[in-house]
Length: 77
Figure 1 (tube, rainbow, N blue to C red):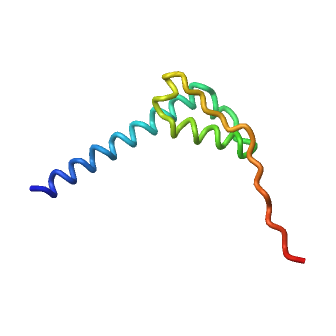
Figure 2: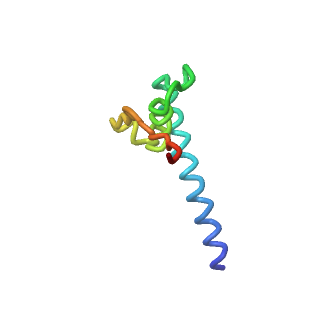
Figure 3: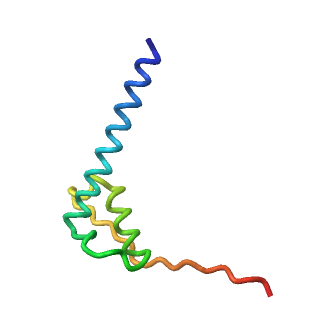
């Protein structure tokens, strides 16, 4: 009987996470983040953070990634 509860709970958690991400994707679409292809990691990051915050976008959260500088490793001399 316990395994039935666990699988039911896992299904509920999966449904909640999926719904959370769908709401975030809709919020990103409403902000027109998908209109053009991301040109740098900041715009890609903004889309990802907006999707991850999900319904919080509708409570006033407006996440943005300003800059992302990645150091490119250089070969040893």
